Image (cartoon, rainbow, N blue to C red):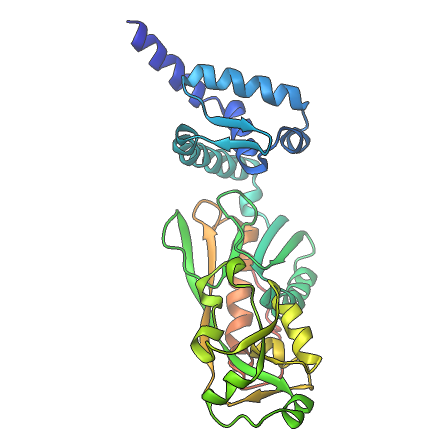
Length: 323
């Protein structure tokens, strides 16, 4: 009888949205102060609620240490269910408030740093002008945005998600080439074959900090070449390459922004990759999210020549995205 009462009590606690909301925010912030700030409550309140929550579910959900709060195995088991509840509550609130059907509100778009800054940003300016009641937050970051943690409503990624409750479509292919300045090529050893690259300095990513295996370009082109400069930022690599101090493998849409950079071994060292458009299933059909999703597909498709290095100019759509 006691076990049955404990099970009923635990189930009720797990279905308490307020407790789950604090639990989720603490897993994301990993600290009492930051969690309290985001939820608008006192940090001691967060601590007390989590202790009571753990007593109610009958399991320790966090390890407390000097580094903050770390999920235990039981905590990891709970988080998947808690995120499902969060998604359902979010979708219900959108639907009942009528926001699901209106072209207004905020949409957050996460993207890779170079693509977000040099390709998406100018197009999003056009989108915002056409939809004055929608606010777009662009996150061009050198990592993957976490859609399950609500970091963004839509993500543009260089990998197709292999799991999760997402709507996914291929946005576009894009090409990367090997680039250098004319001055570099004029003052260094000639480059006629891929083997010649081993005698030149490269600019690239920091090996142990790359967020995707898709970014290990140099291993495919010149694995033995020395990397004189490394950065987690593709924009930093682009800027360094323009200084004329080395070779860099860069997306054509980025390198083409500069007249200083020219392709090296054009056609021999090319690398093709793809961008994927991703959104959580429960938010994909929210009107403002759907409008931005359609807009991105419409404006990127005509720009395939630009993304594949066949044109140095982007084109802009004159078609207003309708609801």
